[in-house]
Length: 308
Ligand SMILES: NC(=O)c1ccc[n+]([C@@H]2O[C@H](COP(=O)([O-])OP(=O)(O)OC[C@H]3O[C@@H](n4cnc5c(N)ncnc54)[C@H](O)[C@@H]3O)[C@@H](O)[C@H]2O)c1
Image (tube, rainbow, N blue to C red; front, side, top):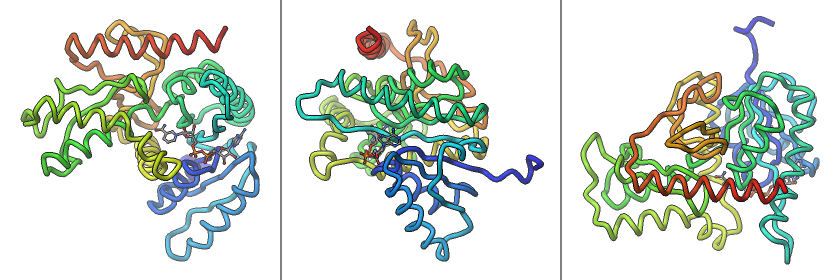
């Protein structure tokens, strides 16, 4: 088949709350020709595929099916949103080890069938899952991408825009580092069309705390977060499929990034058909640099404790 006729295919592995909402978002926006759903709970994937297919008369021509790992062979992007929840009495490290074991078995299967696609990781802790998946795959880091702080940056921009009564799409502001408690806001670079933000220190603190703790609040309220992360994953898929060269805060392998190396963290990257084409070297200040190092040290400590 010539490349002009090649159908675009996205496979989603783990169609729980995040995976099925991501599939539905891709479907609503007619992003791909083929959408494959895979889950350890085969019935969930079958049910979702049927349910989505019944909406096609209102949408377009996307082909959706509950598939198997063989279907990864033609995939442009394999999104992994599989995961297990914490058991009672289980430590975070034990949970992490279980999730890594699941990822290893998923990656083994995907690699049997796909050599040239892009792995897009969303399961938490996303930076660590991305790092292990990259190591396991032996693929170039450019093709193993974590959703990183794209969602956190969206939350940050929304909250700043809400406070200043400006459309959040016009707010240029970044959260970098871990997708989690050690993430950091880059206030020194935040702006609206080049103008400084008119926010008090107290407002800034409130906005950052609400950004960082947003997932806890949503999970307490309804058990899981899935709409905004689905839109963030759709955004990354679109940048890849349309070869956009869009700047997105995804999780990628850092090599001497302000002195940080050998860890995956969320930073602004140019994302196109090749994956992470380029990691942007931000001009951050000394305080921000220190916080970035703390975030990296935290994740490296976790990686060491699982590897032991
Ligand atoms: N990166 C982000 O910004 C972000 C945001 C929200 C959630 N998440 C993470 O996404 C992950 C999924 O969250 P959720 O709310 O959808 O959870 P969920 O429990 O609703 O779904 C997980 C799904 O994974 C499936 N699964 C488990 N093991 C599997 C395997 N070996 N193969 C295939 N499928 C398997 C389960 O059957 C289930 O359907 C979690 O790790 C969560 O923390 C990340």
